[in-house]
Length: 116
Image (cartoon, rainbow, N blue to C red; front, side):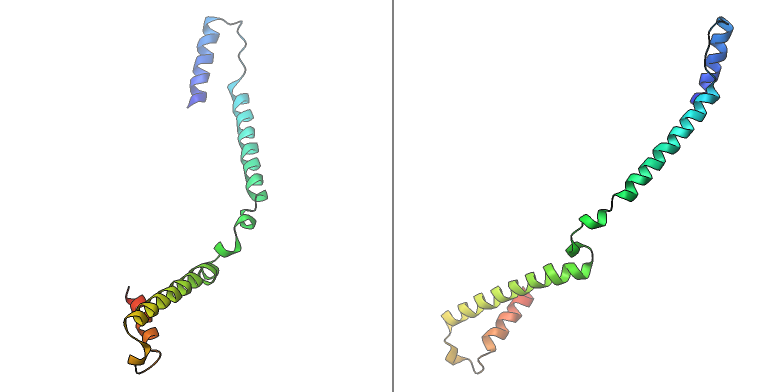
């Protein structure tokens, strides 16, 4: 690793010039190990102090909440629009008197929506 290379370079420099004072590599290793532990501890503290759950809207916290507040109302509105548009189109083509049951246009509209 890098520390082995540093130790070799230190020995080579000491052989060339004995007056050079190079700090011991093991001191550097201990210092860096302590810093790594401090950094990891700081990261853990930062992660634990950030409660991301509080920033997520309640609608998105569960699939049931999302379905009840977003999906079902949207589908209901789309169904209502489809039924109304189909009913109005049928009224323009055929008067209501031609149907035996007054709910027939609504049923046909719902079938049209579900098959689309």
